[in-house]
Length: 198
Image 1 (cartoon, rainbow, N blue to C red):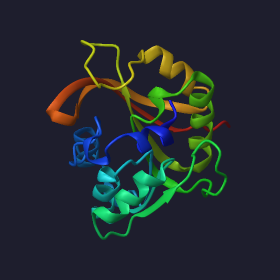
Image 2 (image 1 turned 90 degrees about the vertical axis):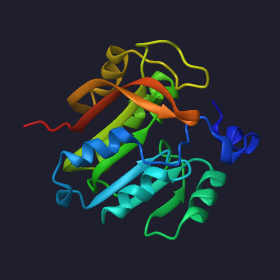
Image 3 (image 1 turned 60 degrees about the horizontal axis):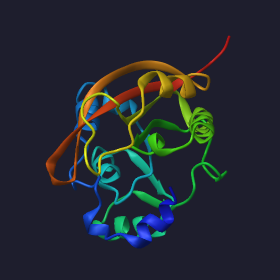
């Protein structure tokens, strides 16, 4: 999909994935970890910045990126914050610091990509994530019924097969995600960390 074109053709206030509340799976994850160990985070495909703003409210230094200038402009206008919102294409941009982010987050960014781009995305996460960092990816699942305007649906084995050569799988489980109009959809929660070799 041409995401720049999508943002130009659609009303920013009526996006099918935007709920204007922090992603519940993200909030639950942070309720279970020592958040003081997370100093830096990046939200890839941040859209209007809902989750970026929430991460920043925890005292985390947050970079939030999206390919759409319209999305980033809208995010910047939502609230005064310390979030570093930036328009860039994660797959092609070389400006991000390596071995830097303690937490990498994408809510439905990679599940719409072709296989080669998912591999490229994963390899790039492996470069920017810190040695003890975690990448949390929320991916549309083939489990459960298909939902109108729901996320692209992928199998767990397909996504693991594309990501695992570049990142070490920590955990994967089925969960629910709320999209617009309070609709619930099935998703995979995939947690990975930097793959290191002795």
